[in-house]
Length: 386
Ligand code: UD1
Ligand code: UDP
Image (cartoon, rainbow, N blue to C red; front, side):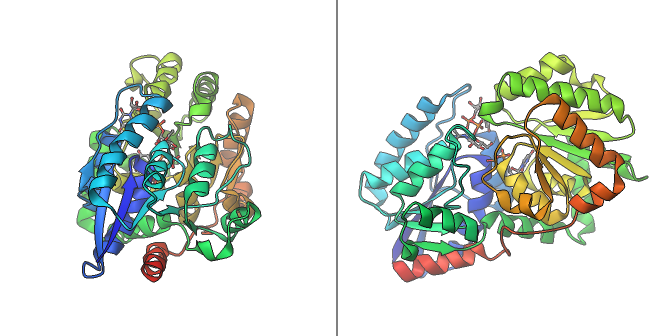
């Protein structure tokens, strides 16, 4: 029996790898599925494991408060050395662009174990944006033997870099598999609807506020290159907007990184409950986050995964970054880059909240990232090569 090891460590990797874990686990006679989490994230990773019912075989538990890139790299590399020696998988599957992915790929390479890269070939062509993710992707791509590209464009990026066509498979993005799993679960499920409403209420946001057509702007942010002045500018723009649009609700589930929270406290004060129409809440587990995204009017974010999810729910996305490695939805007109500048964020969000025609144009549902069957395609390719 072939041993497949899936390695991941942060919230978005877990969301995007969970459907693949489930897919391999459907075939216990063909594959021994080994799940190894690095614990680069702790609470935010555990939320996802819990929602998808994934039980890791190994957990490196590396997270430290305020960890830097060296801490994560070294701890993952050293932790993976022993686990790989012990388990000797036939292939190691890593995801995307985190330090967990790159350090795990390197650890596998040092034992000459082939690596399969999920979500391969995304590029901004600027190694400092997003940082360090663009370099992480490049390094992981050089190490990988097999590349699972979500789209034609990401496949073309790899071909342009000289990767052999036979080594690439276009699969769609597993984020769509995850999203459909969750949307299916929520749809027409009255009991779950009540449960999610309660979860949100306990988290600090009463969804009943939206009953009479009140609009909702959903905000997330965490990019390293935005730390400091970028986040201060974002927060100042949001502060202006909540006053300009007192009838609109703003909900901001805050990433646990202290570098994200500090500018929020600087701009909004240490008592975040002082505001009438902005709700700062703890990170939501995936089901309630998707539920809230589904109810939102506009999404303001610097997230990679949310750029892929929101367009398929027909939600316009303003991306607080200067570049994107996911230009497909940009081309479709449902996503717009606004950077972190105060004027641009205020201008674009105000336009979407006041110009109905502009809003309609950006809010059509498109899904260039997949059809919900990416995991099946990856499993079938892995089956054919082993
Ligand atoms: C990481 C990834 C980034 C990804 C993001 C998703 C790297 C270099 N960065 O960035 O690509 O987009 O995750 O969210 O791989 N923390 C907690 N609990 C948690 C998670 C984080 O307390 O569950 C805090 C800790 O203080 C931790 C800090 O956040 O030290 C930073 O976490 P880290 O994984 O290093 O960076 P992210 O900014 O989350
Ligand atoms: N997400 C979540 N709860 C939250 C915020 C985001 O479950 O409170 C999900 C979101 O739906 C997406 C993923 O987390 O699938 C994105 O994670 P993040 O923005 O941290 O990382 P990125 O995608 O930028 O790497």
